[in-house]
Image (cartoon, rainbow, N blue to C red):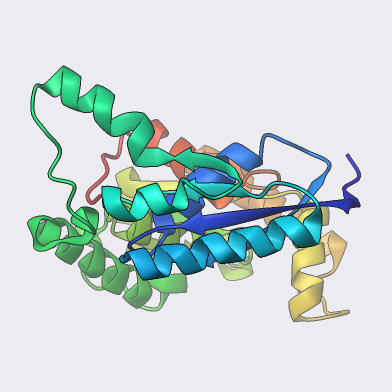
Length: 278
């Protein structure tokens, strides 16, 4: 659907923390509506009435400029601060007001209403796990190192530029998964076997493939008019990689039309990987 840029909707992401949760929620909701151009305004660390009042002023300015009520996605915990923002002339989507009360009723206890709880020392173990996963993934990107592969939760394989690195980093950052990745190169296809370092870790392998047309387009941006990016070469590499993965019993999926989030979710479901961090 063509986006009508004459219709611009301002969306405020308001939080007393980093705003990551509010931003994720906003993206999930607004992606369901096509044909509108969104102007996103992030307002993190709104932790006082004064900051909340400034936020309300900016919402009013956006309303006057656009001629449309702004949308406000809020994860404000402090009720004194939240009530100020709820006074704005806007559509207020208050994450905590919507979900905390029903949870309190079901659990039979009151919320602590603590700001930044998801990133507090309570979760230090999970945070450390995530940092360790990121460091591991960076150290094992693109086959740079073969050491400690036994610690990997998963090893992604596929031809160059098929999505291995961004997927590995997303798995580490978002889920605390130690993900190594290894390129399948022409020399591997000529030898007709997996790289030597991967043989004893075959049970940890997961493959990514991609259409030749998409791969050629991606490679052209990196090395224009090269053999590396030529469509015939891309077809050959992908064909050989898929034959190798079938022969070696490596599970794989096509990343062409999938987001990193979709690839990661499918991968974790397929090989039954549990989330390591929150």
